[in-house]
Length: 109
Image (cartoon, rainbow, N blue to C red):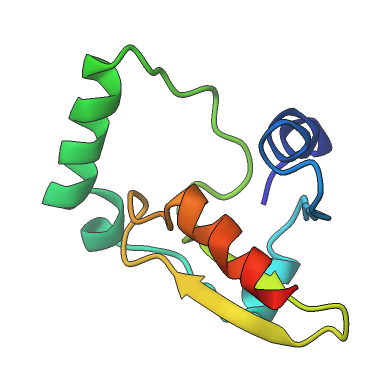
């Protein structure tokens, strides 16, 4: 969930060979089984540690857009429309490592 400008900023730079999609509302999130997080998912010890590491490294977040309680996930969909990998975040700091994601994509080739 985001705005097209976010997609253009990150996908083109990090994964120019992939097709990335953005949905400005919650429809895609809900279709893929994602849900809104509660206190445990939004303010866990893991989230606090992640926030501390980011601040310590000089990384500041931007202004959030959309439903900030909607939990993230990462999906790899093959050319036939089949989901071949799904990662449902346990909390908002639980992201799949980008290098691992690219390995999964390359393994499909």
